[in-house]
Structures are given as structure tokens and as C-alpha cells.
Image (cartoon, rainbow, N blue to C red; front, side, top):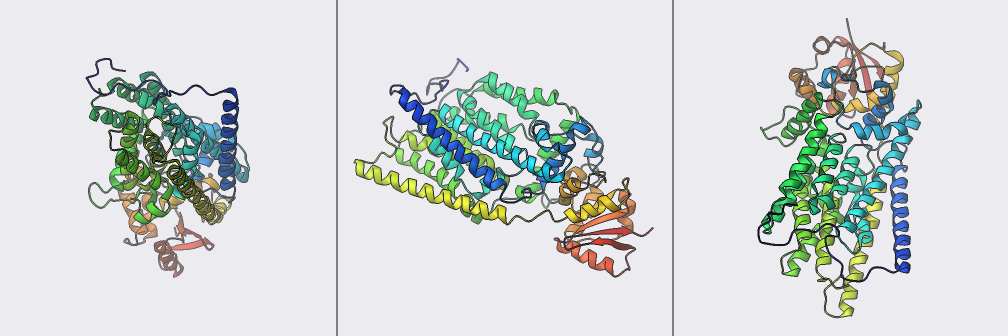
Length: 530
């Protein structure tokens, strides 16, 4: 930590951040605490595993891409080309931006049986989810919070939006885990661990700059409180990320992929330059007010409860609470801009609420600073009842959501392609979001683009605009033009899209120079006439 701090609040100590004045726990108290902790994590594991296997399918379309990629990783190695996307930056400049996540998944997804690949991906995701909650408990305990188990239970009750995100086979789980491991080191301003974590983060997630940004937000809160800005900690986190990218297995292509993912994608998602030329995923769209209240009620209560506690205290918050307030506020702004950031807002909101509430007791062993034991007990009971109700509702809503999650719509279409179309053919997926399911069920064929249309826009803006117009029903479907542009004669239509249903209807008239060669209730395969 910088020794040249200006006069003001004392620098944050190492751990714990809130010194405890009471005597250490007895052996009996330690046994009771360990037993309680074991029961808590048995329950967390039971919840996550149960929810993961309520439905035999993977939750979220992109999960199928990650499961198949991990399955193929031992065979592909560190390939710089990704032949499965012919009209994408990935074709010639592929960089696995989630390398360590896929390396973790690979042993679980190594089967040649697709059902076992799905099962293994679910097991791996459940394990990562349990690790996320354990990292949260560790962060709460390391920060000096007295009831880390209670606050971990609060996170488990944060809302079905957050809990559903913890069930997806996607790299944000590893990102959240690393962020929670970093929280104590951020508040303790420890350069060494932050550098190492930044290095690992750069190999694990598409947006590793998130770590130094969190350090900067903490530093701003400390500076606003009169302390020195943690320049060394920020430099260490940023240096670790840069070193990780420089030493990345896919350098130098990883820098180009990073630019598209973190600049172009967000620029188009947030419509910085007006109406975006291509549509990003729904998760990048702003969160709706109803979703904020209904799907994230627990996390919203935790955050608002923290704000109320700060106001109720009528004094300057502790350095710990001030930093967590700034971090949670920054994540809240990101959440409002793009719904996907709930996975960061939820844990920071819970940590902030816990810190603010525990600050109220002024170091005394009472959770609620009401005068009189009866009032304090009543307030505590009311809070526990509210927490219990929120928890039950969270589990109910998440269970209903995963049980009702539909099977991958284009799985039969992909199976037909695999069995009937020549192996060297390129198949036009006219909707970029169809790629993960097609890739999972039919990795024999190449497609146009996937995961995000910005990767296509980076190398073929004309082709990306053409497909976007067809998705929006704003373009003229000309199969021969498509075939000439993309060098393909087979195409896939997703009948869940109204525009694609209209295209299928026009093909059936036999006047467009194309014919339908396969059709079921969810997808269509058409072939362009020679």
C-alpha cells in the first residue's frame, strides 16, 4: 500500500477489514460453526444440482457452443482458425477468449455421446456454481462480516434472474468466481495477488479489464473519503491483465477479438452511434423495471437495505462499506445498461447490504440497533421472515423457469443436416443465434457466423447487414444472391422467427429458385437451385 497517504481515514488493514474485539471462539464454538458451514454448503450444492437437472437440456442457447467446444478442444488444440464460421472474424483469426473455462469443461465433456456431453457440462457448471457461493462466503468472512453464512444464504435468495445465470454453461461463472476471490484483495489493496489474478482473468474471460475497473472504483471511493488512491494496486491489476493477454495462447489474435467483444459489441448494444447495424443478444439489452423488481427482488432488497442502513446510521460509513457501496453502485449502472450484469450486481449488493447493516451495531453483538431487546428481536424476526419468503419465491420461480425451458429448437434440423448434406458443404444459418445448437448437433458442417453478429460485421459488413435485414423482415429474400455471396447452396430457417416463417412460405411457392429439402415444426433446410 502507498505509504505516502495524505491525512484522512487510516488505510484499510490486511484481513480482517473490521477488527474484532471479542475473544476468539472456543473449540465448541468452532465445531458448531464448521457444522453450520457444512450444512449450508450441502444445501447450496443440493439447490444448484437439483435445479441443474430439473430439465435434461442445457439452459441458454450459447451453452451448447461451450459444451461442444470443450468436447472438441483436445482434438482442435490451439487452432488459430475456426472453420465452423465461414463469414466471421473467427475463420482466420480465432482466439478462445474463455480458454481456461473451456479447459475446465473439457474433462467433463469428453464423451462421444451427446447426452453424456450435456450431462458432463451440467455437472461442471454445478461445481462452478458451488465454488461461486463458497468464494462469496470467503469474501464475506475475509472482509470481517460476522454472519458470512447468513449473507451467503441471502445471495442464494437474490432472485431467479441471478440464480438462472448460475445454471448456464458459460464463462461468466468463472468470471464471477475470480471477482469474488479478488474482493478482499481489492479492499486490502494487495498488488501481488491482484497481478496474479489479473493474469489468470485474461485467460478466462472476454472482458478481463473488469478487474482493474473494480480496483479503480474502490480507489475512487477511498480517495473521496480522504485516503490516498491505491495506485500500486490498480497498476498491478492492469499489469496482470496486460501480461496475461500478451502471454495468452492465442496472442496476437486475442487483442482483435477483445476489441470486437468489448468495444464493438457494447457500442452496438448500447446504440452509442444511433440505431445499431446488427442486433446484439437479449442479455445485452437494458433491464426492464418489472424484471428488476420481480426477477431480482432479493438483490434489490439487499441493496436498498444497505442504502437505508447508511442513511439510518447518520454517520460516515466505514471504509469497507464505502468501497462496497461504490462497487455495487457501479455494477448497478451496468445492470441497468445490460441485464447480463446481474451476476456482478447481486454479490456486490449483498456484500454492501451486509456491511452497512453490520456497521449499525457499532461493534456490539446486536444486528439491529433498536432500543430494547423486544424491538430488536421483532425487527430481526421480521427480517428473517422476509428473507425466508424471498428465498422460497426465488427457488420456486427458478424451478418453474428451468422446467419450462424449451429443448433446442433446431436439434432435429441439425441432425438431418449431419446425416444428409455432404460433409464439405457450407450451411447458411440466416440467424446468428442458431449457430450454437447447429454446431453442437452437427459439427461436420461449416456455418456463417455465431454467438454474436459483430464477429461477422468485423469482416463482412455487407453479409451481416443482409442477414440482419432478413431477420427484421426488412430485406428481400433472394436465395441465389445469398448463395453467391456466401458460397453456399444449403440454408437453415428458424421457424420461431416470424420473418423466417414468411421466407419458408415464399419458398414453398416454388418461384424463388430454391426448394425445401427438410422441414419439421421448428426448422427448415432449403437448397438453392443450381
